[in-house]
Length: 145
Picture 1 (cartoon, helix red, strand yellow):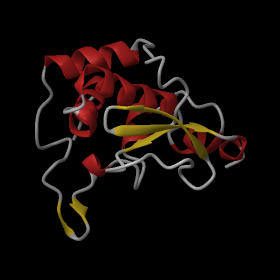
Picture 2 (picture 1 turned 180 degrees about the horizontal axis):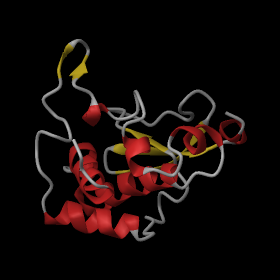
Picture 3 (picture 1 turned 180 degrees about the vertical axis):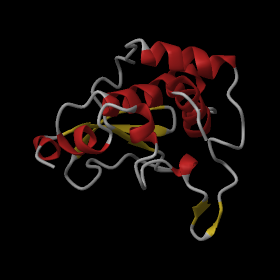
């Protein structure tokens, strides 16, 4: 689809964190934009400063996968249009907004339990939890990837 950055970001915010409240959605938007703005490591190479490049990087966001576990994925960025709050948060993030609690985190996930101390591998260390998602900051190892 030919969505612009604002539309893509609003859609991924809704899909990935729509049930997480405003801070949860801002936290996810912060991580996505941190990846877009990364100057070192994997995201500097693969995202290349592009919202589209970050969102569609393979195996990063379930919300862009057509199938999960061999079954059709009913929850995608295409399945449900964003609402005004998702556009507001996308605009905030695109204009440089950062949720301070998340800071420089590059990863998040919902562990359905306790947050693990490292993710992924040794690239990130646990930083904080915002609602159901755990957030991870990059380690020195990440910068060499």
